[in-house]
Length: 463
Image 1: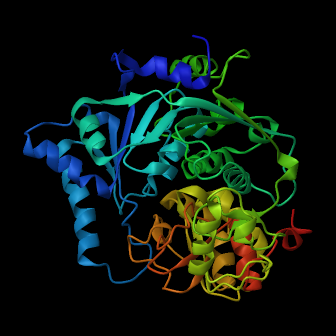
Image 2: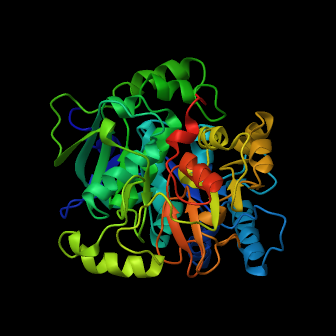
Image 3: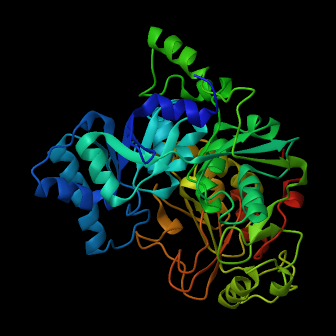
């Protein structure tokens, strides 16, 4: 096979292609969560079984209680329903009592369910996270979830291809989260609409797997259909020995196949974008979309200075966020912080935040929710959890938590939160909540300062 990484993955999974260009694709991994109950109900109403239950995995994450608080009846019902559906259909479930429970996009890679070359679907937009392993991974709607359960296939039109190349090296204190916010701010929330993004270049190759997961996770916030990074030795080292990873002779055979999963030197993309990684600074959002982001050293923009039709949206964003144009971003007071989510809830993220917080006290309250039960245990074993607690933050259990607030973890109306999550839409973390997106290290810095601030001075001498 020749062409781009997308071409190779697509051709590998295409069963047939209709005259209108829509392909029927085989699905290797189907991940379901509490919100998938409509799809199970549809199959049950038609008396249909799950076609390949051994290829579907259930996860309790969106509604998972992460703190010792009263759980609402509807939350208990959602969790119970997923358990009943999994038991009835023979699907493996990572439930609340499972020591391997966690956010679906964290435990997939963690368990070795996410492997190069697979087609992975989930009824969640951030399924693009798994593309960090050279997988074809994208979110699907409720109707598509039912179709996959019934047939282990999905109808899709092949997206256009886009390569974002990060040349050079990141500076100290700059992370994959900053890379993502940087390109989204530069190209816009629709900048990659309809495209499969392949991330490439020296700065991407230098990222850890956790960093690559963060980068691919945020592809959706720039309009992309999915994000991918070609697998390499770093990928294989991460996968080796994980519960669902190949073993023995199967491992050598798998690596040989995975080595072919990269765009050819002469592959042509529909769009090419190049970014100098050295130009990227710690970045924060100021508005109500991930594209409304700037370096922490900048100021809140004047809507009239923005191009095209962005000025009206910017005015509305500033009104909602209660910010004035011209105000330095470094200095915007916050009310609380949140560290976690499928974007930044992995062990590397917690280590970065702890490096900033060690020996310091937070000036505002905050919640730290690890991405999985295994990450929680590892963070406790490494002493990271104690650092968070000693700093005055609350240490929670694994789950989506305050990213989307489905489990009751919310930001109060009018309150301002520095958050390591993926979306800052109106009401995302609670009705009237004001969210500023940034890296976990930047969230930790904001907690210590009591306002948005540049993390770099706080990291000096802490390498």
